[in-house]
Length: 512
Image (tube, rainbow, N blue to C red; front, side, top):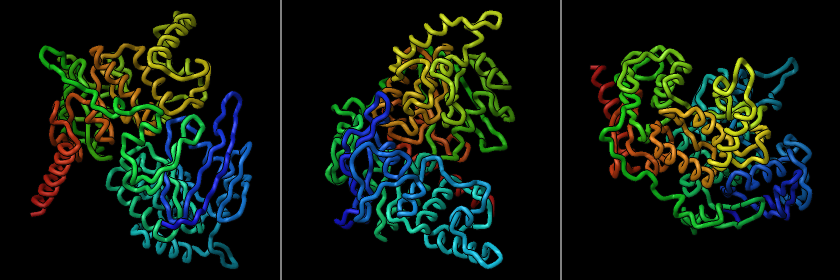
């Protein structure tokens, strides 16, 4: 890592009506450095990046990039200067080819138009240097999220970026795909490129980053070398208090004796992914589903909630066999479901907190088609206070809330229906460590009230902290179960590995 400073942001100030988003913040990145930018939701990370890339105009301070003072008027200006941003939601064009996405706006030309052969050849060579060998003539949407991330990086390299900003790039990647991404990041670093890395996953910060800058409430907490920090110290700096309680195991013990089996699924299979899933959830029990992305966890949740009705196998609810035909059918039987993508499948972004929260219970609080506004107001006020939803008003559009508070509104939507069982698919994805702790505390509270919880998470630590029992899933099958003190990251990974080896042995045997 070079000691030469590539980016220096001095005393950056940015205010919005009623909010001091950045309060004279200093931030610097060196050449050949992977620099983490950390903080809770609302700390100012996104605002700082938007000021840097020209999406926001700063109210004060100065920015020096590559030795010169700059003030970008748009993201295009910053890109031309050598700053490339890779967002959590990949900002490429899915129905154009891989090569077109890499060279968009910079296509090699002949007298008669685009030199397609040269573009395809150059795109294949560029990806080949990264260890990615794919058909660059195919549309981008033919490939996985991980490959799309690699294409975004290839575009950044081609555009001669000196600084790459990565905003939650691993949020949709599994462990193997994340390892590939990190290898490419190390190669970029070795070439002298600087990377700003934003992630809520603490393990990733310690694995890949050299330095971390921490923001809180729009102010600079400090800059530290990652090698000199512990996880506890980092989280404590982020939340402004001792993080011991945030990181400790929460689940306690669970006595299954006499508890109602809310859901019992046997040999669930479908044409999508599932090849024989067995899962049981009892009243007041938190059951985790652990497995890599694509293992079948979400596909099982969709079957259990009636979103995928084309399945084989048996489902019992409260001891009675049922055939799930629709989500409405599941809701009527006391099931609730928070999907993994709250932005696409959860929130109504341009509607208020009040409207989002009570969407599912409108029939219960209406008479002859007329909404009982007073009853609705009472429910909304009660849940805002009960689960500490931070919003200036119930009439605030939900899209203006932080990710953690959006997730709380979605949980409140289902809790006000008083369900028997709630399925939570990646409930803390993209949420900072402080809000994550609050969500986990809410999960524990839900369980304590006798509600069954089926918890899906890609973060093993989260499953270890919260689950009473854990089912490990591999390639559409349950390959093992852990309970109580058996639940550890080591045991989970061991079962995943055993499932993978068993699958390989089965495939090898079938070839004979």
